Image 1: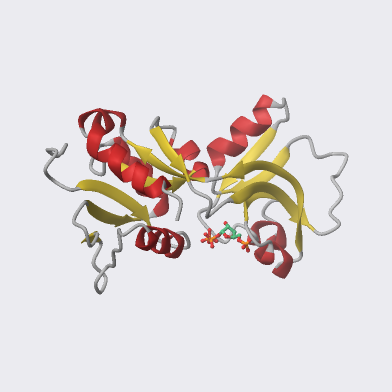
Image 2: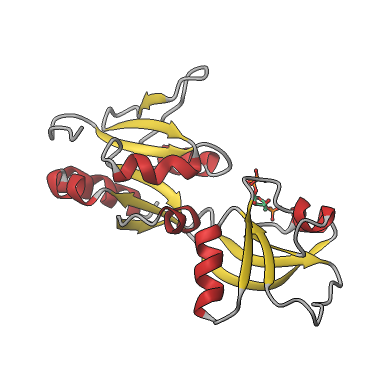
Length: 210
Ligand code: PRP
């Protein structure tokens, strides 16, 4: 799976809300790309990058296996994966916060022995509260997590908050911000060592001030 140095570098990008930011940023650096009609593999205009469009939560798997040597991903998803990567740069765009939230005005009950939380981020939630010695019961959801307190599945959620609009629209509020989430350019360590020179050039280009 590891490519020779004459081939383009392989880069996995996450489908969804980060794509527009990434695409605009790469365009400014002379690395424009687009995906024709439902295609999931493309090249940048300069031919230096072969780009795969993957589901956000699958991105660490592709990079960990060296299928994509590089990837752009949020620290939330990277932490959940449990894999180790080289962090080559942190972007200014795409930052969010991991927060615990509940219904507006919800008061914690005296008989609540455990914090009952619904989340997509089970590893983060479990590690975060266990480190603080707070017992937590976690229910895994895959999306629309804000529904859990509204429908009575759990009183609390741990989720990403960007604008806060989703919480507001569902009568929820942030109880506490738990962590800042940033977007990173990551590399598979073995791939990085093999393609050190060309990766360095791309990273310098991406870090250049406009
Ligand atoms: C994310 C996150 C929140 C929402 C927060 O969900 O899980 O639901 O965005 O953004 P806001 O603060 O700007 O409203 P996403 O859109 O990825 O969809 P999902 O519900 O399928 O996880």
